[in-house]
Amino acid sequence: MNAAAINCLPSPGLALRRRWASRGMTMLMGACAVVVMAPLFLVIYFLLREGASALDWNFFTQLPKPTGEVGGGMANAIVGTLELLGMAALIGVPIGVMGGVYLSEYGSDRVNNWIRFAADVLNGVPSIVWGMVVYALLVIPFKTFSAYAGGVALGLMMVPLVMRTTEEVLILVPQSYREAGLALGIARWKIITVIVVKTALKGIVTGVLVALARVAGETAPLLFTALGNSFWNRNLGQPIAALPLQIFSYSISPYDDWHRQAWAGALVLMLLILGLNIFVRVLSRGKSAAS
Amino acid sequence: MVQTAPLPVSSSASTVRPSAPASKPPPAVPVDDLPAFDIQGFSLWYGSRQALYDVSIRIPARQVTAIIGPSGCGKSTCLRALNRMHELTPGTRIVGSLRLFGDDLYASGIDPAYVRRRVGMVFQKSNPFPTMSIEENVLVGLRLNGVRDRAFLQERLEESLRMSALWDEVKDVLNRPGTSLSGGQQQRLCIARALAVQPEVLLMDEPCSALDPIATAKIEELIQLLRERFTVVIVTHNMQQAARCSDRTAFFYMGKLIEYAATREIFTNPANPQTEAYVSGRFG
Image 1: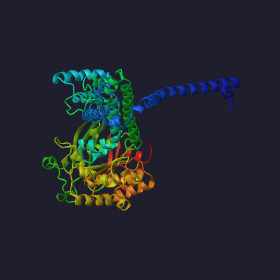
Image 2: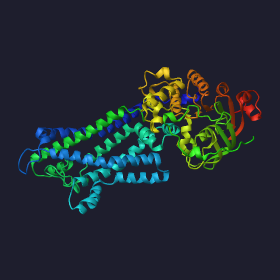
Image 3: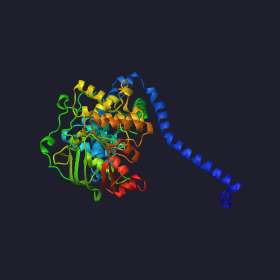
Image 4: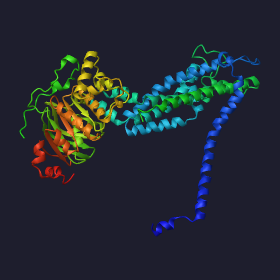
């Protein structure tokens, strides 16, 4: 051991101080991690405490009761949310996935930078702005709020989300698979659809589910488009109920029973989103192909 | 070198070969003394950087040609130019002519996919498609080129796997994923996949550099079998490998073809002092 090494050794007092500082910082960071987790548990705790009591069979099977009557449910809003998500997926998935394929497989760097920039800006557009835009584009010309307008608003929100995640998982597919396909004399579009996209399929599905979970709870874009409905929607050209809208209108009402139902609706919505996220987890656990 | 009269190109080259079963007899070599590749004055640029300088070479059919040279000498570039794979790199440009059995592969209107069906390629790292079974991997080139005939596919499956010396090892597990095989088996699977589309030439880009000596020996043995039916061009940084398994060797240095001769000549009696310095291990 040389002299320099000996000089580097801290004195016993300094070593002790460092150890305590290290412990203190570790605990501080642990506390921050707890603070990150805490709201999730708080949300689940309150939703269960307030909402579980109003959750019964009727909640899932019945329409809302008229003002003043106790009971009823949100069957129409649950189905409405699923219908809206279905329409959103019909718009958001094909456009988003194809846009992602373009970014990853075809576009030139310069064009891609602009598209990515646009998508990132779109991701940051406040959701109520989407509602207003679709209101101007679809609600005013057709002179009616409609399920279509709600689905379009949610679908447009999904496009940039799906596009960016699709691009990211496609880029993870090794170049060597594309080369192997090209070396076999296979047309490029077939390589992309049958080999590249298929290899990254789990990642793409994951991205779609995350985007669905993200828009499932959106209220603002639906306020000016789907509007809400106390009855079953028989015609997608007419207003439709949705869980977030129902929660919104019930929670600002003066009735205790409606408040309880709003909590129950929030719980159901939360479980729907949680379920989507757990499904994503399970899917991405078996992800070996693209990574 | 005396140049033979150019052969008519356009008629056969512009029509895509049908891949239907009955249409093609196995050995596609028309005349034995016609070289597989006839390359004249071929230069290649990546953007403004020139990678190949005025390469002229006639690669005979049904022989194994090894391309050797130090890293960055253009040997892989030359190989990839043989089936136009270099075009995947944006901004490449070529001059000169490159003919495969008389057909100009760079003539306008020639689809690179058509070139690549005639000139198959095996890469440094084995790359079976992870979503496909062994069988699907072998047949993917045929299926995606529109072949539906089940009997023909079955026949190509077995023949390709036999030619790549893999049939006995995988015939009972054809439905397992291609990636479940060992490294050497995966590389032979990739060879089978390339052979299934019945190319005339097989290019190999350092096919053994990721393999252990036993798997390497198997691939080298396989190359000896393949030369009976195909023209093989193999890039290798392993001079012993070139000496062991090739009939002719081309030595590249700084983007130029320095010497192309019988392998024995190159290694025992090279004409060029640079070749001699390289094969005797004095540089590179």
